[in-house]
Length: 438
Ligand code: ADP
Ligand code: ASP
Ligand code: MG
Image (tube, rainbow, N blue to C red; front, side, top):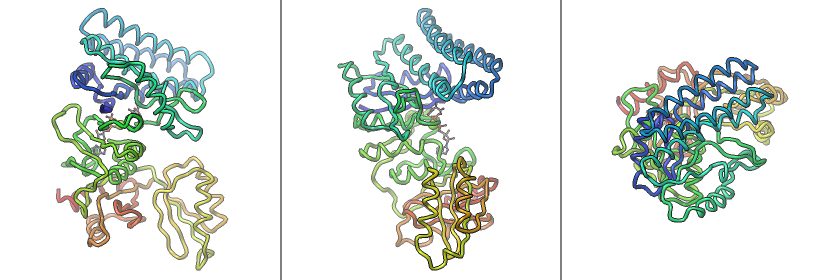
């Protein structure tokens, strides 16, 4: 059995949803669906209006959005009876959304509204398969996908409860479920964060130890640079889990950063495929390292803050870095890059929630400077220590761009550089020319 995840654009129109149904016809699989393209953005916008008490505007948006879904249903189905079923489904979800406009609006209501996108898309696909006489079973993700007390996915819970759900349908071969949505440790509706359907697929794949996790999207696999900013990027045929994880974490949007972990743990291959071009080979991600000693791809992550702590107490002292790291640990703020000299340490974070408190505590050690609007440019490959010249090629390509920090040697798969955000696109293009000759 395989796990197949289809992203929002793959089911973004009725034609595309029908196309996906066509791809599923003779498969034995668990299908993980995102919400129809732009749905989660629109639901977030409705929540934002309700949080800021713009109730009338929210009600208007809900109205328009419901009409769009009614049109989707009209053209998705071929028969009046399924159109009626589809419309009933849409009306009941939108009634539910509307019920949250009447009273107090908290994060609980927000998370419930955000879950409606995946609940709608999965039911619509299942109805459509039914209309086409393809037997499938709808598995409610809210019955098996769970977070623990720390807000992290709980793989043990997923495994036990998914197996229970599957056991209710002996003989069925095709299952449809929702990506992204889950319950938290208190049993409330929650989610795996934006883009989290990839993580749902990986957790499900790990839970049933499937043969392959397939992420079907709108591009033919992981490209060697960000196609949103760079022309002539190329699909990479094979990557290791380590390389894919670095790329996902440092901005390659095609994969959610948390989606590699569960697959890697059980050594389940992950294949990235293009829904619009199913015959393209895409990218296969496995434990194996292919093309060792090569630079494979470049990615970039925005919204980074660089923090420099300068302290004479660091000179010839030990234990200084531990105390600095403890501050970040207390505020549950992960550090991405770090670089030290004898009197200063620079590091980067992407979460500014506790920045002011962190700064105050760090000032006890020395002077603290913070640079906002930075971007991490990440060059990924297999940099065996004996091979020469990787850093030179990267720096040569970036010779016209001011670099604030460099990290090399943290792992054999990554060289990270920090530049100002407004130089990100220029840096990505310069690296593309310098490293891949295009
Ligand atoms: P889905 O809706 O299927 O989850 P996403 O929009 O999350 O799709 O991810 C696919 C998009 O990721 C592509 O359309 C592409 O623009 C973007 N992307 C960014 N970096 C890369 C990369 N290195 N390789 C491929 N796609 C990338
Ligand atoms: N629908 C959610 C989002 O847009 C989850 C996903 O698509 O992966 O973020
Ligand atoms: Mg995605």
